[in-house]
Image 1 (cartoon, one colour):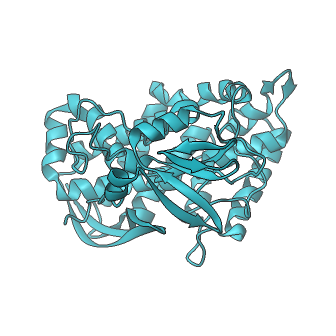
Image 2: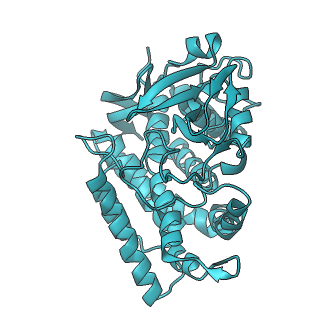
Image 3: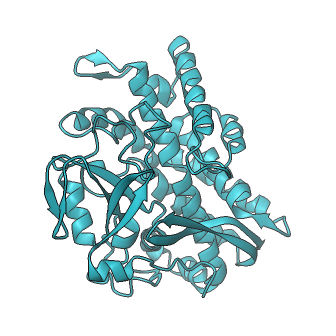
Length: 385
């Protein structure tokens, strides 16, 4: 099997039952596996809630023990969700602007040109994390030097080598954000902190706690996911140089290639919801206040929708993947992620002829019933000009 391949561990359960099960810190979760069920459930926010009283419970694994700040607008349901989203959505559409894209191009070119000078490069820490962190300064409109701090945190915001949920490490992020909010309050600038502090909802200014909620989501939601996407893409092109060459020769398929890589690698496996009333899911009874998860990674491999679901079809034309979520809570950072991938792939095809994988260590996510490869703990490669 190719090193870049991500097998589908959900296939049998998806075909037989439509759901799986896992124990998340003694708080069971039903994992929904079929695309139609995932989409239907994601749209039904009244029955399957994101904004429950227990902050952090919809995340899998649950973050109730490491977080008491509500992530906004992620953990807010309609109608208030729309009010928050109206504030932040224009900011997260800035990647469509030429100046924004030029800044990302400069970052990608510098990192890739540096990679070409090395005989060996570890992609997760020395490439993907660097690009993700530096690109985040463009999204937040903060000084480029801030990326050095974020790089020093390592690849995970809430995890450490010892623990899948590390409260002490999470506090590093929370304290950092508190400090930046205080700076923006005293000296407003053109960054996202200042934008949020000056914003109003329902005729009042956002509180510092609400600003913090938006910022936690921005930092945490776009970290592991972007790092996994970049790393997996590099591994794929290392083993499929013909795809890299094809994108160079057929630039019209670039956007299709990006969507297909995002579908196949599904950087976020799943996201939870809390059931608000007794109901049924996949003909299975669900009690009020129980939890379900929407398994984006499984839905993206549903053969009822996707032809050759376990292959990367680089020019796939019909691609209704759910890697950025679906319905009310679709990912705010999708435009940034797509733009960043477009810039990286364009730079790769122009500057790199091939990539050699030297060694690697897979990153396997333990979901009790399922073991899913989400990417790599480490990936050492050589870029060839």
